[in-house]
Length: 96
Image (tube, rainbow, N blue to C red; front, side, top):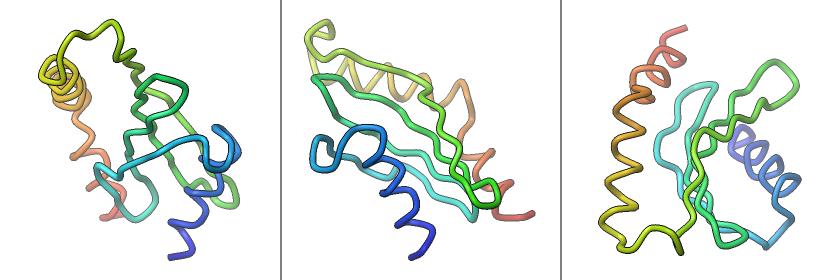
């Protein structure tokens, strides 16, 4: 619970409280991956807990106006997740 609150606080700092929506895609012991919708854009955001601070990496950005259908947006997202093997990376964090 404390970990999740740190992630939410970090997202609030980045996007402004109440100015975004997010969904967790995967969460491990010290890291999580979420899809954030803010400023007419979707972003894949990876948050990693490093001691006392949260490191943030924005791995992909999608502009829904340029992607014609929901299917194409989801296909691009799935391709990126597969290519970067997030599931394996997050599971490794649980083991350590």
